[in-house]
Length: 438
Image (cartoon, rainbow, N blue to C red; front, top):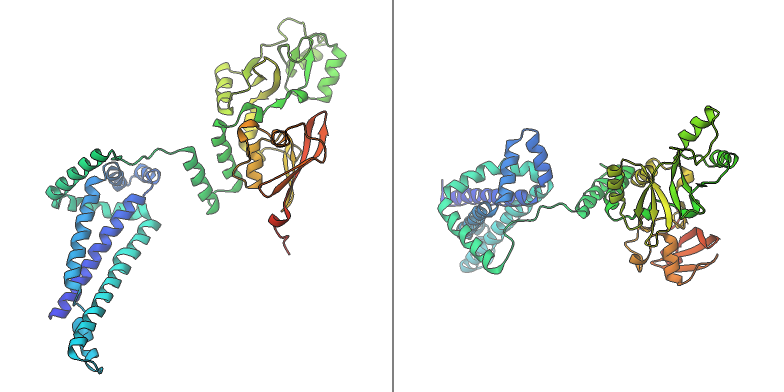
């Protein structure tokens, strides 16, 4: 084997070594702990070794840096003239001096070797490590453990020195692997974009995460829509109301809705009717004690209240002890399941075309933001519904045809019933409109 062939062979070995260290570094760093835990549960013991490296990465990356720097130094020594003997004969046929031919051959050799290192030991391995990090990491962790043993004294020295520097500057010595709600939403969005997660399933995940931020008022039946009985209501009136508004439970109040006595179950009323017993709300045992909760609870806290009280129905009151609405466990679950369970009649947001939506005034602002693909609306801490947004922006009770423009959208009040905003038409501004499909 001549000098030129030996140099080329050594360059190939150095490129392979550098590629190995590059892919080993990036694959372990990019590996997802959740995926590694799944692989470990399926019997892949090497995934546990990768997790151990991620928990204590100092020694592992020290070995990689030692290897990469050693390869870089050797590559610089060997690579400078590795291709010169192959290039010089070709240059000798050109009308240039021998001295210049030597200079050009060395320069070309340097460019070729550097290009090979960049392509084969950096770009390609790192792309592989990014595209399949877990699969690559479990294959390189074994050989890397051998390097750890071989370079243990050097690794110990540099690792301890690095630890001291980190403590000196107050830097974190471990990565934070805590998964936040934003991380879950980002993963769900990535799954939806990749087609792995269906749109309704993606929406359910978003709704579950939002249970900790959505208030009970966003899912309740507002007081104006609450069907309730008064203690002195006649049997005929009760039967007529049940027939007109069939529900499983009804509030029972004394005088007005703000003086709640409890609730009555419709099945108890049905039993009395089937047994030819008079329906009298004063009858003993007919009215049950109702769960009352403040209007500042989140939906997640509301579920806890239902679980602890073993109830599925509650009255929501404000700081003045006035009833603002009622909520059932079905209301909470409907918020989670969204369009999977809601009928067309219950939809609060109806998209008319690519540039307009008809939205109920009591629609929670989170749903409005999602439907319009907006990140935020102004003064979000001052309201919870679309009607509240319009009131805050107008600084008065909106009237029909009132409108607000913000964020490229126009919000126009279409219907107001006794100061309650029933319907709002939302349209894109002309300069933001999406062209209709041809």
